[in-house]
Every structure is written in C-alpha cells, then in structure tokens.
Length: 529
Ligand code: GDP
Image (cartoon, rainbow, N blue to C red):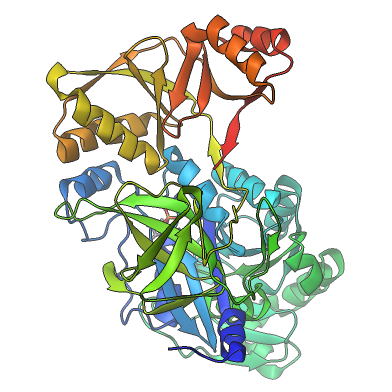
C-alpha cells in the first residue's frame, strides 16, 4: 500500500519518540503506566509489566525479578492528541547502563523524572550527561508531591546547578504531602486541584481559572497571600519557557505532580506532544539523513534475547531514521552488503509481539536476528550509509571464563559470541592463548552471562580472576606500525567479538606507558559501531 508523500510527511511529523531518564525508585515505572493509561494503551492502571509485575515467562525473567531489577526493555507506542508517541523503556539497573546509553541515541527527547524528596540523584546526572552529547531536549517531572518533598525552589536550583540546564517551571505546586492541594499553571493562570485516590483512573479534575478569584482564595484559605507572593518570586527569579532553547537542549520545562496519584502527568503529556521535537535528522559517515526523506534508513541500537525460551531467536531493535518500512520490503544490510526481504518485523503491544505492517521515521521496529545483525548496523533501501554515534564502551570488569566440561567449548564460544552481540557484555579472545575473557561494566552482568550460558546453551562456566585493568580498542593508519605492535604487545592483545584488535592493559601505568611508547597508535576507550 503506497501513500502519497504528504501522508508520509504527516505521519513522520506526528511522531514523538522519547525515553525516561531517572534514578531507580524515582517513579519511572509508575509514570510509564500513567502515560499508557492516558494513551489508552491500557485500560486500568496496575497492568504494566514492571519489576514487580506478573509477567515472568521464563526462569531468566525470574532471576531478574529476584534481583528486583528490570533487565529487559521494550518499546511502547500510543496515540495521543493527534500524535503517535513512542516511549522507549530503559533498563533500571546501572549494570545495564550501556543499553540505556544506546537507547538514548534512538530518541529525539527525554523525560527526566526526579523524586521530589531526594532531588537530583547520581544516575540522573550520568544519563543527563549522555543526553547532553546530542543536546537532547529534556522535559522534567518532579514526582511524589503527595509526600513531604524538598523546597521546590531549592529543587529548581539543584536542577540548574547540578545538571547545568535552565529550568523553566510550567506549573507551581500548592503545598505538599498531606497538604498538597494542586498545581498552579504559571502560563494559563489556572489551578488544577488535586484529589487523592484517583491513581487508577483518568480523573476529571477540578480546575479554577485565575489565581485572583474567589474560588482560588477559598481553596488556598490562609495560605493565599503567601502563595501569591511565592508565585511572584518564582516568576521573577526563574527562566521563562522558550521553545527554541528547549529544542536546543539548553532549557527544560519543569512540571510538578504525583505519578502515583496520576496528577500532573496529563498536563505534562499535553505540553510534551506539542513541544517535543518530531523525528530529528541523524549523522552518517557520508551525510546527514533527514527524517523526512522518502527512502527508508535506520540503525540497530539494541539486541535483546527473546524472553520466550521456546524461540531462541533474538530481536534487533531498529530506529527508523527516514522513510517508511512496509511489510515484505527489501532492505540492504549495509555492513554485509546484502539485500534481505523483511516480512516479519515486530513491535510489542502489552508484552506481546505483533507483526508490523508499516512504520515510519521515529518508530522502532524489531527485526528477527539469527546472528547476523550487530548493534550499530545500518539498514537502507540500497544506499551505502552508516549511521554514527552509537557507542560501545570499554568494560571495567574482567574475568577469564573456563568450562566445567572442556568438551563444550564450541557451545561456549557460540553462547559468548551471541551474548556479546546483544551488547551488554563483551568477549575477548587473547591472540596468544585459547582463553576467553569476558568484560562487563557491572558485576551483575557476569551472573547473567553464567546463568544464560547454562540455561540457553547448556554450558557450565566458571569465572576466574584475570589481570586486566581496562580494555582499549587499537587503531592505526599505518599497517606496518600496527603489525609491529601486534608482535611486540601480543601478550596483552585480544580480538573482541566484532573482530577488533583490543589491548587488555594489566595496569593503568602500563596503559600510559604504551600510549607514550606508541604515539602513532590510537587507544580508544569507546568504539563506535
Ligand atoms: P522506578 O524504579 O523509577 O521505576 O520507580 P517506581 O515507579 O517503581 O516507583 C518507586 C516507588 O515509588 C514505588 O513504591 C511507587 O509506588 C512509589 N511512587 C511512585 N510515584 C509516586 C508518587 O507520586 N507518590 C508516592 N507517594 N509514591 C510514588
């Protein structure tokens, strides 16, 4: 089915693709649920698959549940006020931060959720730093107003100082905790009154037009004068919302509310679909691809093992960057130079896989991966493009991996290779020995790898300490120099899962020494796919 170009343009313009960044426990799962409720993607709150959800379909998931973390992530799409919203979930546990970073390369904006009682926490700072690399526009939601939170003015200051972004409050809270009465919109001069206990429904809240009204005076009672003064102060001392500054990633509109009480989320979403950018262009090694180009292109930012152990395939998540995917179309897998017909791309609805008939720029589709797709791969309708900026980070922890049963080394290699393609762990094969070294950014990933090797590949693996401080990807324009280095430093050289030469430095001092001794070589801490 082919639509006229203007329909494609309209479809693309309606997309809003974002992710939530927050510290664990700030309320990401809760707000996600309310957003889906508002998007009518679920009927009753309390049905979102979260870390406490009833959605375990395998032992692998029960391990995740035991740990109280969300290892897996998915894509949620819902219509809202004429827009199509794509919300990309990110893993909550910091051991899986690489996945989160890469997911942030696939969005056009982000929503930062802050626990009002705790303020700006570490993981939020780290994720904001990632967003800043691409000047991603950020919405802010200060959550848990139904509790005793910190002084809102202080919170606003903290956002500005710690996160180095201007905060423009859109609404201002009236009271907090048990005295929380609602929020006052600084731009529309309306009070939105809070009624507790409406978290599971779409409440029809009471609104009061005008702070200077009898109704407002009645609601605020003795606090009326103090509140009016505070509002004057806030208006004078804070930044005014500016769309251009927001789109440049320099200013964030700030909303106050309670996700649990489903209060303030709708107002935030209303403004979000208006202000957040439609799909943005993306850089490739040869040119910038605009989201409105007619021809399909996209890149893979995440590979996820199927949660259903009966199908052993994995899903590669591709962000569509231009044009349109239609079921059965031919795509070029650029790295392999191969044309493939794709008729079974999937998306996820309420945890179920659904075949995608059509997807446009800004959408995410899941491609079945039987071991040929890697993170960072580009697909097009024939043009040789390679999207850039999808990072791979040097792991920080290393273990040698040994088999309980040496006869199973084939399975071990296959398992490690596939797990490393998913991108959350990395495997290195030293060029001098037949050992295998696994690298990860967090301890938990080692446990996950051991568990999945056993569960999915039937191999029992044992970890041993290994003397590696860090890994650096080695590059050099001069092949002779590289060959010389390969000989001299063989003892510490490995090949990673993608076939790249990697230096496994035993100590920090050793690494500096090598960098000094081999000035023509590049020792990279991140590698782009
Ligand atoms: P996540 O780790 O960021 O996904 O956080 P959750 O959404 O799971 O929330 C963490 C805890 O905070 C849960 O017990 C929630 O019920 C609670 N919570 C979330 N939002 C609110 C809120 O607005 N008010 C209150 N009082 N609790 C909240």
